[in-house]
Length: 148
Image (cartoon, rainbow, N blue to C red; front, side, top):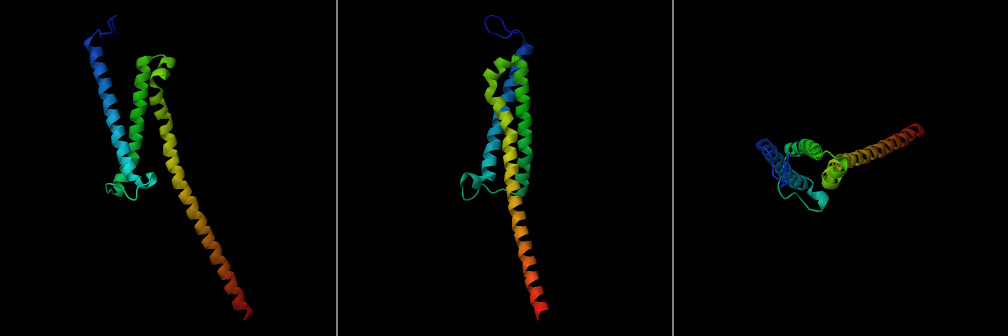
């Protein structure tokens, strides 16, 4: 693979290295693009009054799909890096940040789902309170009707 001067021995190795570097650059640009768009969509969560750029519901749905595409790209990148290194200890020492990002990505998506779930639970509690109030009102009006 490499000689003592750390030069690549064949054109095929050089070409595979170029593809690897190109994929790494592509994934980095995709991550930057994703996070800029994500911060735009979720601007109120970071303290902005409104989004810097207007967006439609379709863009938000696209971003939900894009986050899993980015996750797949990160997973592929981690796999390729592991195959290239081959040794788990060296892999963890060199690429711990990539692995951490891969592991934490579903956690953050889960937190987004948890936020939706909290909104759903709050909505159900309000509905339940409204139903109880309606039921109590019916009881009171029924008692008044039958009392007279």
